[in-house]
Each structure stands twice: as structure tokens, then as C-alpha cells.
Image (cartoon, rainbow, N blue to C red; front, side, top):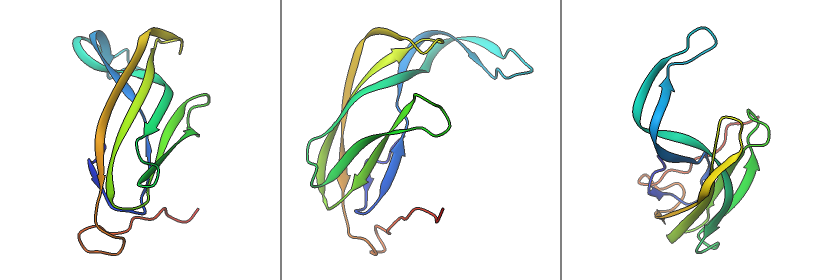
Length: 129
């Protein structure tokens, strides 16, 4: 889950999943098959589009996921205080990474508040590479 309030000057990389109801495996690995459950679970998605309602407050960009080729994350960069509506359009993927079902569109409001260096909203920086 992404916090709904972030300070300015933050770069966040977000993975997007859809919710589905049905059977799923939990605890599967290369040694065990895991347990089979029925219920709500996350489903991998392909990001089609992400829109920031105010690019002066928050910018968005699709960036490759280094741990999974052909998969993208959303890079969010907060610039200055304000409110922005983030709209995500995604497609669910099956086990073969093929699109299934119709496109899903969802949105939420994110608040950028405070100022960098302020105790209430500390500046978060990337560690040196």
C-alpha cells in the first residue's frame, strides 16, 4: 500500500496488482506446491497507463523492473505541496503473462505536504549506488 500523504522530493517505485476472487496457491516454491485456497488475492498486471492530474505536484513514469524483464513499475516523484489524482489503467495477466479480461481503471488522491527537511516531512533520498 502506498501512503496517501508524501513529502516533496520523494521518488517512489510502485508495483501494481489487481484483485481477483477465485482459487490461488499460497506458499508455493521450488520444493513445495503450496496450499490451495479460495478467496480474494492479488493478480499480476500489465500497466497500460498512469496519469497524474497535476504534473507540477507529482510526475509519473513507467520504468523497467530490473528483477523481472518485460515488467514495469511506476516511478512517482513528488515535486511540491498539493493534491493530485493518480489514475491507473491496467490489464490482468494469466500465468503465461498474457492479458486477460477487460482493462481495469482505478484512481486515488495523493497529497504532497510539508517541505523537505521539515521534521513532519523528512526528505527521503536514494542510497548511493
